[in-house]
Image (cartoon, rainbow, N blue to C red; front, top):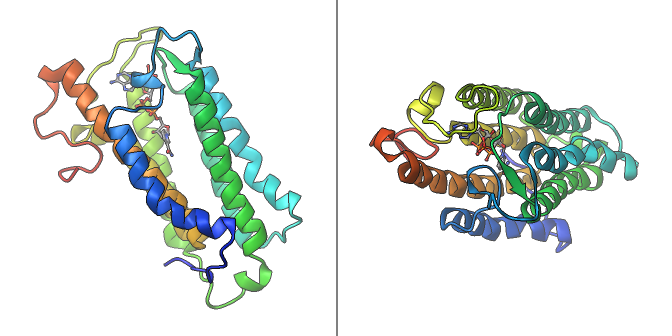
Length: 260
Ligand SMILES: NC(=O)c1ccc[n+]([C@@H]2O[C@H](COP(=O)([O-])OP(=O)(O)OC[C@H]3O[C@@H](n4cnc5c(N)ncnc54)[C@H](OP(=O)(O)O)[C@@H]3O)[C@@H](O)[C@H]2O)c1
């Protein structure tokens, strides 16, 4: 399913190993209430904060171009694999920018520390996979029978996750009339079963991307995203119980219907 290069003790390979430690840490910090400061968990009265739309654009925009920029900077060969992996990750972040601008109806702020942390984090992730694509995958490897990316399954999985993610962002936006800032209980789509179907869809997209990317570096990124979003979903379900307790269905789960 994934291509594991021989461990060479370099930074890239150590970062892949470290993802196994980072993922549970990300889960624990988010689920135990040490939340990054945006959306429901922003400190709204903090002095150092930006309007959510501005903060979100700042964190996503660099990642639209970083992967192809890494390929260009390293003078990498543009095989079909490089074109597809660059296109999917750039499209992912371009979609997020479009949603930030035209879909989400924000009520608050993003704390400046979180803008800086998440912005660096996304850029590091995109730069990391771009660096791996430029330095560890060349035309010879792409043509090696040992390297067989799951283009069809991975691409369809990425597409399904991306579409479902967008669909649930639309459902969240429709909870508020323009200018409204109240939080309401979402019940449509997969919200019928879980508090964070948009996170589940985001993870489906990242795991689809990992299948196409094939080199284990993208799976390492997906592992960390999984830890983070499972933790954020845990704390989000608790938030719904605290704030909108009476309306929350007793069997509502966090992110995976009927399971978690
Ligand atoms: N890859 C990753 O690690 C990662 C991590 C986080 C997010 N993301 C991506 O970013 C997307 C958004 O994440 P997020 O954490 O910002 O999602 P979120 O907290 O659910 O917020 C998304 C939008 O929906 C609004 N909203 C949320 N719950 C609402 C409710 N009950 N009533 C009315 N409006 C509500 C929010 O408004 P307010 O701003 O006013 O709360 C915001 O505009 C995710 O689906 C995912 O695609 C990716």
